[in-house]
Image 1 (spheres, protein in one colour):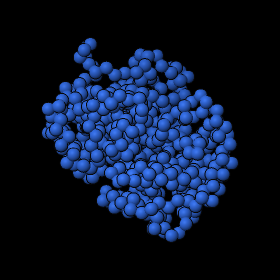
Image 2 (cartoon, protein in one colour):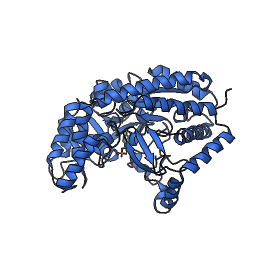
Image 3 (cartoon, helix red, strand yellow):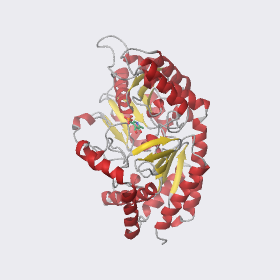
Image 4 (cartoon, protein in one colour):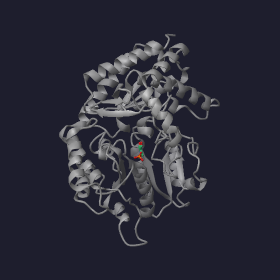
Length: 469
Ligand SMILES: Cc1ncc(COP(=O)(O)O)c(C=O)c1O
């Protein structure tokens, strides 16, 4: 779907009231959720006393309580109560070959048996993994492995400052670059500033410039206005738009950013934690043919195996990480680049190429996007719609992410809209669909006709609960 179409459909949803599930029907769905997830509830009740909030990630599925998963295979996951789900969470994007993909798992098991998990010293797999990334990503000449996307984002902005000798980092509202002190600013919804986390001193944001997505004038002004205030070291962006495209970007947005970076001798940092090896084996940089100076990678590079993050890019820029005391940027981690993660990276990328994982996951995503839009067209008064960037699918039902904060009732509206979207998610989850945040679906190369049929049935069921107006 074209950018302008997405915007006008989104505007349409935002101009209308939401369409809640009637209270009696919602109560039956909640009852069913509780009935069929007794073991998950038990685990959650115990977890709450020893794990804050009962979950390990603030972004985990947790309404009305989180479901504990037992195992995954292909495109399915099973919870501890034995319920099965068509999985579109895919661990939050890393899984594209399918869950428990044997050819990959066998390699890792072999390494654990024969070599052990980590020695803290260099292994040959580092070289293999780095070379494999370099082979695919046109903007990458050197790679430093870290342990998460968050760490890699932290490293990228540090390297940008060290390389350019400048101070400011531009961040685009609504985008997510992990949870480090400087980056938890205007996440999820543009303009929300430091709202999402306590415990971060305001000083941490002193050199972060928050620019709203697609605000070309503000972007240019940010570069110009900060010229004599330390200068802009770099701009960090999710190339398909904040929240992996939930805030889609104008077709000229990335090109303009590249141009401004060149004009102002600032670095362009592409956060490709989601787009790398999912949108394209060469990432968004290849897909859009726009070269960043630094690339942030994570998640998918180890295909679900732990310790997954890397900062990568041009040789001269990345060389800032080497050198003697006082000359280099300090980055690293005890378990970073351990042989298991590195082997997972090397073999996963090889297998993705061998099986055309991106091509297959994209083909399915295109089909399900069209099928859902056809289904939603039968209830056009709801305004629901779906769009995708390859195997990254967004569905908009209440568009709570996009509500304009300058409207007087913004917070009430956002919370109401979020609640209705959560209620929809409760229904889809109860009936066997696992998605991300009730707004997103990631596909893998194994999603098939059966998955498509079942997905449509569940959505049809959800629509049947929403009264016709
Ligand atoms: C674009 C983007 N950057 C960075 C991160 C942070 O990665 P991690 O969860 O590995 O710290 C995420 C995680 O969802 C992400 O989507």
